[in-house]
Length: 269
Image 1 (cartoon, rainbow, N blue to C red):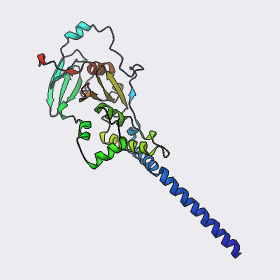
Image 2 (cartoon, rainbow, N blue to C red):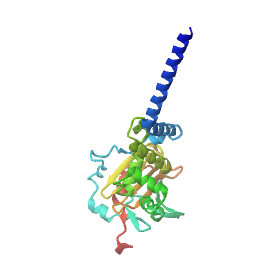
Image 3 (cartoon, rainbow, N blue to C red):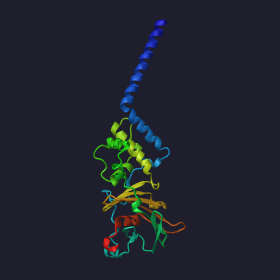
Image 4 (tube, rainbow, N blue to C red):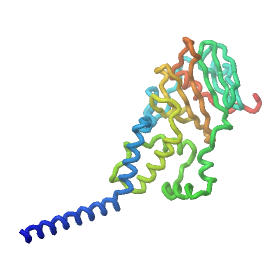
């Protein structure tokens, strides 16, 4: 009996040693990736929107760009249309009704008699995120550069697109360790950036203006936009309607504002 007990104890010790070795090997090879995968999926419990990534709008073509406005809109008439102006920027009003410009802190409201409201945030208050990263010589910045290496983000749009395109679904316990760290940083940034409104996120592009749309006009709730221009400036809008109003807005209304958004020519300021 003592021999059997001794053999059984030896076998148990060998199995335990093998298990310990296997765990050590796994932790050494996939420990970091497993931790990133676990954290990423844990975050979704309180932030389910982190799973959303930008999708083309239903009205976009295969190239990802917004479909043009109906050709029945005469070009000459659009050229004569009175533009909505604030700060040093302008865009065409999506609705024909009269509007009022109401300054309010760090934004202005374009309120239409038909009930719609466009909130345009002060461009100077929008953070140049990429520049802030590049000009901050901290240990955190060095770590980020080591994770992303070269090429770094080409523009603020590229940075935001990379952040919003990251999802816990893209993580795995068996992924490359460098890619796991990259996803971890992007997802942390995504939590920090947040979503302006629920109901999904869409990518939009019109000429030199591109960016992201949060929310769905068909839901009857507000829709937020982050637009990046050719010179990589960030602009933010909210499309909504006044409480108790029967006014509505559509995706085409949003498209018409995005495609005409530009800096006011110097001669018109």
